[in-house]
Amino acid sequence: MVTKLRAEFLNINTPPHIFTLIVLSGLGALSLSIFLSSILEMSVFFNKSYALMQLSISLYLITTAFFQIIAGPLSDKFGRRIITLFSIMIFIIASLGCFFSTKFEFFIFFRLLQASIAAGFLMSRVIIRDITSENEAASMIGYVTMGMSIIPLFAPGLGGLIQMLLGWPSIFLIMSLLGLLLLLLVFRDLGETKIIKKNKNTKSSASFINLFLGS
Image (cartoon, rainbow, N blue to C red; front, side):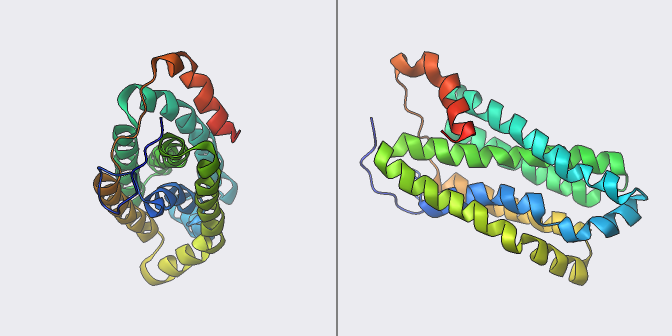
């Protein structure tokens, strides 16, 4: 069953706007690379080696995979909307935690929690599958993927500018503010899109694994 309603921006009674889905998936890409130009300064602040600070990237990627794997089955049980909103709230708290961290261990902990936003990319694809036919889904997923591909190109430069003007901790404060804006956007624009079909319940986990792998 595919909804025939036309998307109306900021109307949760219609399918979510493609802009919302692009931003939802794009924030994770921004979070991954926006502070790359600040790693050296961060290593000095935390009195850690540059190589050790790079754990904030590699561990983030590992945790990203974890959040994407569990987000699918959880959204099947609790709904797309609530899981998406919850993951954004975790991201906001984690970004603030990174901003206030004065110890490396605390920073890494909150940095790993930041990876919760990775659920946004998976949810964008799942929601598109909910609201469109297979032919239409390919086109919309293409737009979402394009957004994720473009953002990392300018994210490090943006982070470097923020560091120069406000200091590297402000990068994470700005990330929390962006998360708050995304939370409001999703709250106003994303209604529940989960389609309940008894004959698909037993296949949900496999379906989400396929989405995660991009098939």
